[in-house]
Image 1 (cartoon, rainbow over the protein chains, first blue to last red):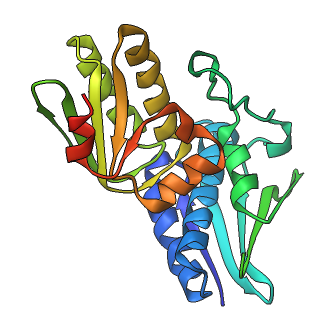
Image 2: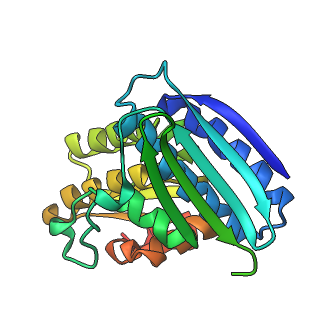
Length: 138
Length: 110
């Protein structure tokens, strides 16, 4: 199974993104917990594309490819926005008193927590490419 | 996303449905902050009809909790979907909220 779809680069696309990856993940026999993990990781990644790579310019599109691998379910997000390396975002400070909690960086942290592989590359021709894999049976 | 609120004697229950992500989390924030603006800080968020919540939604809840706690109030969560609850626990954010299995128990806690 390998499916690719393009989405408008606005936050209103997030629901369609979720529907698409959910359909693909279920075809790969991921269980309910794994499907939710994929939904959350991809939603956070797509939100980052809209807010950081495209900075709200909803006319730009991004592309998602879902593929079943022998070891699990792979999602690749491609956009042509500004370089946005998730590794550049500092890990959020959690387990601190409520008043000290700050919002920055949780989305990237969640992506790493939810998925078994998170890899990023950027080149001027292809833009940002984020590859994530959820392994089966975990 | 449809948002409704119901006032009880000791607290207010706010209910939303569908998914909460970066596109509509600000709407939820507006509704909750309006309660705060009306002097309401004892709040139950009925999540029984919410099947997905991204980090944008969590931060709305954290910000409201930051407003409620210093005033002696609390935002409590009720009927949280397993996937949402698991992800909250995974990053340790569940510790900032009291979570009840259903709305009746949550309302009764005030």
